[in-house]
Length: 105
Image (tube, rainbow, N blue to C red; front, side, top):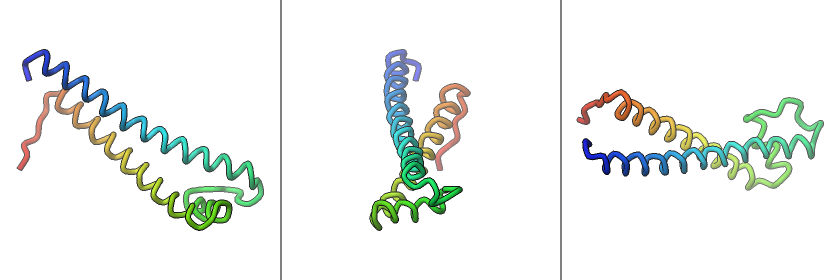
């Protein structure tokens, strides 16, 4: 891409795409932290060391069995969002800034 308009458009859409991915990741991470904070506030003595392994049990005790599955889907979505954001960032750094491209077979 040597046309300045094409480069400007590519940067514009890359910024939008990266911003959306980062925002979704931020929302999911904030929700995870807020869930832990709310549970430990409501039940201060239930779990001394609340971690990801115990979180689904804590949520199912408080909000019902369906909360356990929503929690699992949320963790999967957080992992996917993080992976996609990191992959996109690495791709754009390698191609855009370092001008390093791998051939696609």
